[in-house]
Length: 317
Image 1 (cartoon, helix red, strand yellow):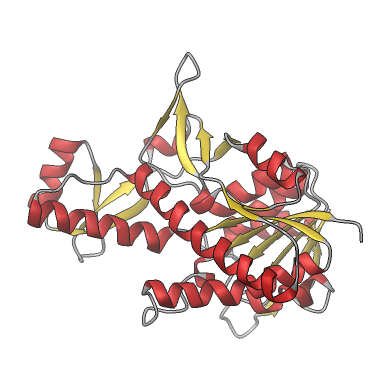
Image 2 (spheres, rainbow, N blue to C red):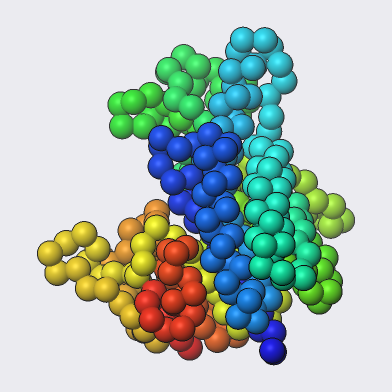
């Protein structure tokens, strides 16, 4: 069977089912369910690179860090190291679940996680307008202290308190791309660009340094897909299909649309929520514009059916 190359971005719902199931065992069970569907893809002849979200997981690491700092005076964990921590932990869960699923099915394929840095432009406009809230709520005095002492950007959040905000710059380069390529050329399933990758910037000499920022995981997975010359991008999310006028009486589910139609719907600015579906559509558009052949948006249980054209939303060049 001819192997084809796909990249898949796993949404947060694939790791945390709901607020009542956030423990590590709960997350692992959710990962196991998702890995069944990824194994289905691999049985159909796909070679797969997997990106994943990490927003809630980074939040947990930050919260533990904040509590330990306030209670015991233990050093705090910088945001880039929080990202690295969660790449390792989530990668471990995914690769173990995939290993066990492959074992059950008799699939001879190794799985590896690559802790992945993603370079961003230090002059990206996002650095002048940080909007991504992270960490816990603070009162006004603590927020002022953090701003003056640590240089944090802080904003008041709808009367609930103050929060730190960080920029969300666009990904430019997956630093570990050569390693991912080599592993996939050897036939391995690779987990990479977790949480959109650890954001880094390069100085004049090319040396890298981690920064406090958040990269959209769909954008990073799209970029990786093009770097790997993948033909397919799958964005796994909470809904079976993309819809126009979502949640309204005239909601219209989309089956297959063209790149031109996707760009038109996105430009109209009324169909897709800015913090959820809009960046997924944008990631698909960029993937196709840069040479990808097809993008699919669906939920984890329907990945196999979407590959057969039975459900999901497909965007084609």
